[in-house]
Image 1 (cartoon, rainbow, N blue to C red):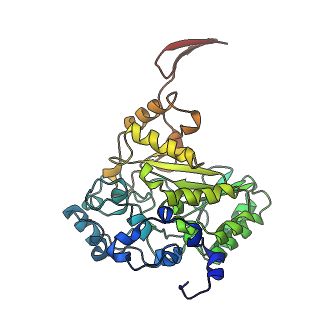
Image 2 (spheres, rainbow, N blue to C red):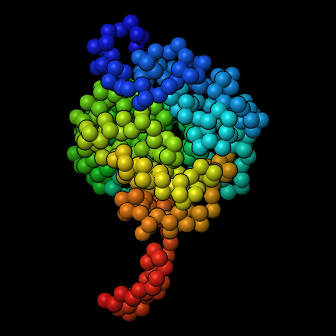
Image 3 (tube, rainbow, N blue to C red):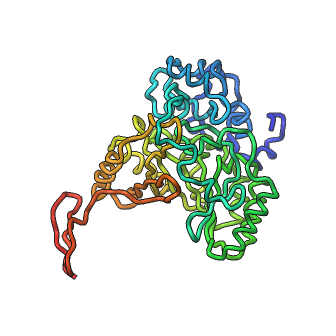
Length: 392
């Protein structure tokens, strides 16, 4: 939508910049690439997608590239190429290669390395796909992959085998096949719509998917997995929210990894969703050098609760090819859970899981609080490591 369109038409499709304070929109004018961009364009999610950073030349205007980053960008072709929205790019530290946003967004040379135990499809989603775009592993729920596109391509992506092409997985024929499969399996009551990022789709296309799923009588609720509030909060528009409300209950699962991602603009987007009645949950991937310290993870969980997002999962980073530099020992995750449980409110304690390689599903992992058990007697420890006995 160009600035020549009427303000009324703009307000019907995305949040009018007039209702946003400059402090919420952010001072993007300080960056030469966007010094002449109007607030009207900056707040238009279509403009953001069209102007994503895709080349080394544009990226070099934003950050001082290291040799590792230069080689990573040069060789990130095809699947999971470089792509980040102008909004998300403004969050990067131009001088610090250890910036948590920068490490998630910019390819590095280490992605070219693979380890023997790494896999293209570590969670065996392709194996458990009865029809194109649908994964059915758990008895009462299914995963519907509707697009290969994302607003920004996270370097730790577990679906890097399929994410990154500018096309949709699910054409209308495949969508009908997926819906027919769900309808024929009466146990399926919960469908997670993911990808890629489903909110890359236009509202009318996403609505067609929701409408077809809602035609299946046994579906109780739907979930949408997205990173839009993090990498492109401008996507949370009046029109999108109005459309989604027609198909409630819909839960929104948002991928947060670091407190720095929770900006005023992100908070504004989450407020719109929460105020409109959508329950919000977070899914976090444990990433080396980004959020693998207990104090960082606790800070993230607290900041999430402040914007009404319930911490849900912390994932052990999957053994996908090219991301070994992001993986931590499992002991790191267990230590983080030890520092959360009992040391902060229960709402701030997610479940730490390993998505078992080979399609075993999510397996909870955590500190051992049950010391021993005998007939009618359990020996337990609490978060202070004090021992207690429970007698039945």
